[in-house]
Length: 148
Image: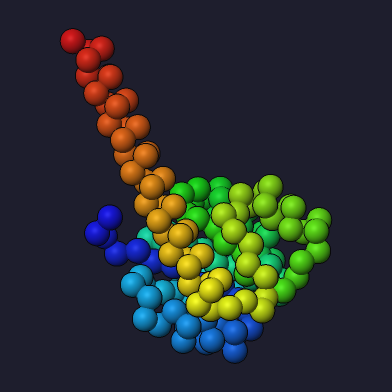
């Protein structure tokens, strides 16, 4: 796919968000950064985002709540959790209710863990989009055949 792709990073720890910004600065996609789930939702309304990377524990609205909303409103966005919070019940809830693509635990290695995971998520999104477009084309062709 040749269109621009965008990744949205969400974390209430500004220092961590800036570290992410530096770590992905030369990656071949557009980057958005939000310091809260509410700010992330505003950015999602204004931008075409393919991948969301969110922390789990944030004030006001948790990462899990954000994942639930994104899954409902933007089901095609690939969802990744980046968190130091690894309580099993919370992880399972995030996986089951947020349908997350990956869970990356803090601390992570930028080159070995983080950057490859984002690239794979973008590729996954591209494959899903291509599959959906092919499926839509088949349905349209089938409908026009039936109309004859």
